Length: 302
Image (cartoon, rainbow, N blue to C red):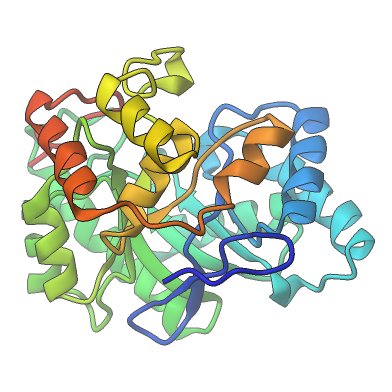
């Protein structure tokens, strides 16, 4: 799947169900909130070979990413089309075409872009609506229709969802308004993964993309990174624990968007030109019985 380059950057890409080409590894920006941090990290990321950047309206950092792109793309002699940018519709902006279009336009203005490559519904539940309220189902339908209209108008290259369960996807697919989601971005790591979700997505040509690849590190929980199984495999393969966790996902055809503000880790995370043997993959999969979840839980949303 991977191919070596002079920079040792992992160059594999996925082709989405509409033909859009997406890098297999991108940079996540959750909890990167200040302009100076984002400018520095994007600079290092572009130098290391990253060409995909993931953000969301609720992260509050789109405007900082926009400033970084404006400054740094020329530095590396890159054009807008050389990078892949994902952002997500806030759960507070679910609704009809006018509501969604206004939110999308605001994200574009913040990012300083004419379009994004991938626009996602961030969560199956809407803000300020109880998880068990059937209005969630209605709002998902109306919102997905609004995204399909943006897509049909050529204003976004691909559309998808985030944190959707099989049940949510099944509901959407009953009336997908002519567009199957290109991506479902979910929490996915050896402590918490859903084989049924991966199978459903593969059967329906929806790419699964992982966040929280390192477990709870965003909340300073290092349990997964320090797990003896992960550490033993890292030592055996002479790679980092983070590299093991990313390769584990990629070998299941799951894309990844690891977040780090360390230049060393940025380089490590995109240098994945190795393969985890089958026995070690089985050992990592066996950790899934722990069912330890670190991010918000969509399972209660009707």
